[in-house]
Length: 188
Image (cartoon, rainbow, N blue to C red; front, side):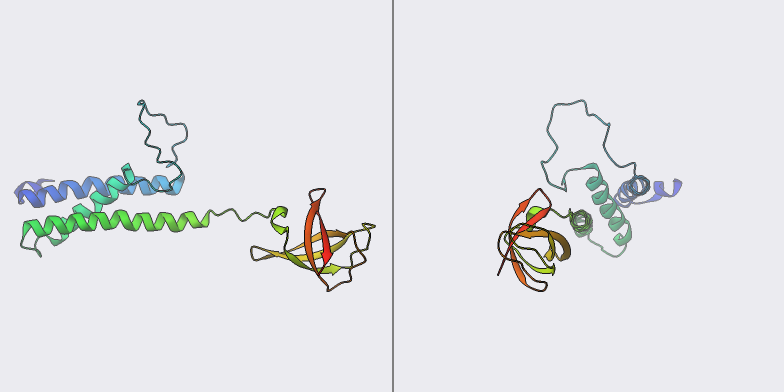
């Protein structure tokens, strides 16, 4: 790193920020891909609550600091000879650093959407309409089957009715759930 000693102090500062931030960013990225970035089993030795609640993104975190310093440092190094005003250069570097944090925020929010729980819950069928697939015998004497769409997924579920027999192809309304798996329906 002997080449840094001959540089202007501002440019040297940008290099001293960019190089360690890049190394730490590379280590964080590698640790993320191999699954070592979780905080399970780690305990801090202070009494402050920095948890942030249920928010998926914490503004003041070590990862965001590194993202900011990465954008700040490399912008300063890259634009040092292109922007003659040192104040404009520093402001530009700060803005790009903030942009890095914002882009990371956008990426995290998009990734959080992928973790949505799409598991089926039979309770979601109440008061919905369905189509009879296999004839439902009347007076609770047997079971038939209905096709129902829940959250964009079509399900085939067992159904019974208190009324008269409901033939295949008829539209029904789900009234309740019996024995945690059988729909009680009525013809519409």
